[in-house]
Length: 374
Image 1: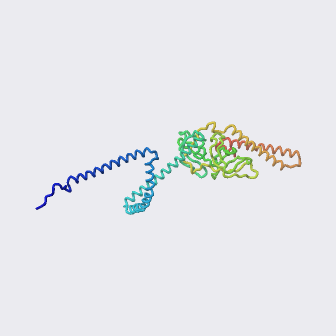
Image 2 (image 1 turned 90 degrees about the vertical axis):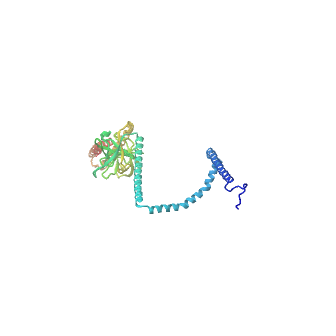
Image 3 (image 1 turned 45 degrees about the horizontal axis):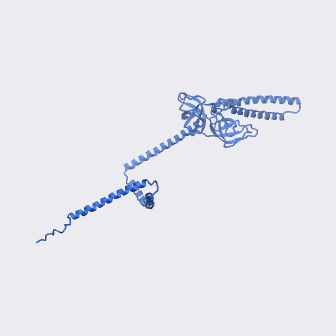
């Protein structure tokens, strides 16, 4: 006969077992609540420590301890990550590779576009800086063409009479003087560059204020002429516009002296100038539409140029008289006197001609001045 269970013995799956599980779950919930509350308290206190305090020190200490471990873990996992990338690339299908190549081309094109935009922004900023420095009233223009033959040096701009551009206006870019407008249409114009052999612009040495003319040549070399050999000129000197003639603003950079040669017996130096602006850099330019009185040569500048010219003429007359006197015959005093008078007259006539040419050259900034000087 089966033995009946005692009434006082609790069943394994009875009420007491359920009570124990409920008690365990309650304790776990209480611990969770306490941890959450503790975390909130620690977070609140830490946020009010302003970079110093117990919790901040604990956090920094934990980071100090775990940082080497994270670095070691990253170093160990890096080869596996690389192998995973290699495996994915090797097992990629043709469509995926095609998409990646297309994305690569698009990124390269975007990079080129961004680089071009960055360089354009830099050039425009330099243009604005130069315009602000000299306070020039000017019109912005883009270079749309260059010389169509080998014996002229010109550029074409996308601004004309409709944009306020007229013949004779000077042009400059971010580096300095570029040239002068010689032809104008309604929506375009042609600019003769400084390096053109028909270009002639009044200029001076910035440091010594020695006045001269920057002229182009057939090979594109710039020469600074009419600087006397008794004036100081050195390699590296900066050449700027003088403002004489009222065309180019005074003080606009043109270039630097790269060569100074003195021919025995010559009155003027042979000076070569390297321009700051070159045809390769012409993209955006400014056309100067008007000048203020401060941007033109002052009365003192004009007087100094005249004094420099007069000094040169005096030296020429003195040298000519000395040469003629030493070469004359002593056989007759009357003949010597006549020869001296003839020589003086001839010299004065030559000086007058030279004076007219020099005055015409230094008084204007265009091709006609070069012809007059010749």
